[in-house]
Length: 333
Image (cartoon, rainbow, N blue to C red):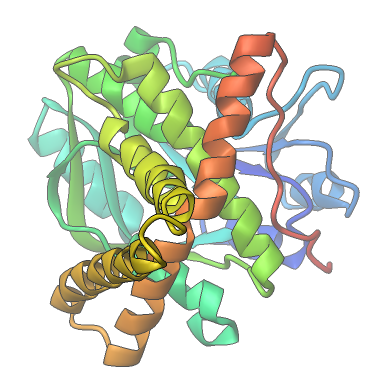
């Protein structure tokens, strides 16, 4: 029988963390919670539930990647023969039966090193931004290039590639998957309920910050693995620069010469992008109103995404350390 460990990471998740830990306690042999400087009693809560706790040293900038590595290393210390590790974000609940389903795939297909399933928003009606996340999480099943923060991984494969890159402030899971695939492993997304997530994005400012973080992740991913044949996040980064800067700059710069026609053409170009996204999203069998909403924000997110791209390249050129972009407020216990 395979040994399964669970690594949960969190920072000020409040009541949500308790629900997360209760969803995995009892279903696995070892649960490790890694705390990144919480001030809401998260550490005490985890200890009261009998969970192993790792507190990150705050003198070193913390990242989700660093937290996962710390949890994984501690897991191997207390459970030497663990075969698979389930990573979970502290704002998620693990669906009943998921651990068994993921384990079945890893046992049946030795070349598969990562298994993930369907992450859903638990409260999509709470805000339009939560609904956007729920649509975003709905990705195709089958062999994939990457996974998200919730996934079960083969311990031997994770050890082989050296775990997550702790310097990344975002996009650490896809970057890890690049290295896992380069080492011969496969990433598999199956048609099964995996986790319930609570984005808690209630305001435009939070969505804007999250989109900046995404833009930063695309830029850093393309910088690290953008060369052929991988071309990791090169297309995504180029789209941000084209739609967020190049086209509007050209349209505005030539507006006087073209007597405003360039502005009209820019609007038409954005409209075309909008309808292309709408056509794609409708294949997911969501409502027309949600498809329209998602398409609109896919056009708008090129602008905060551009800020994220610029921030990464400026930090890289100036040799500055990059720090995480937080968009969620501390949860109420």
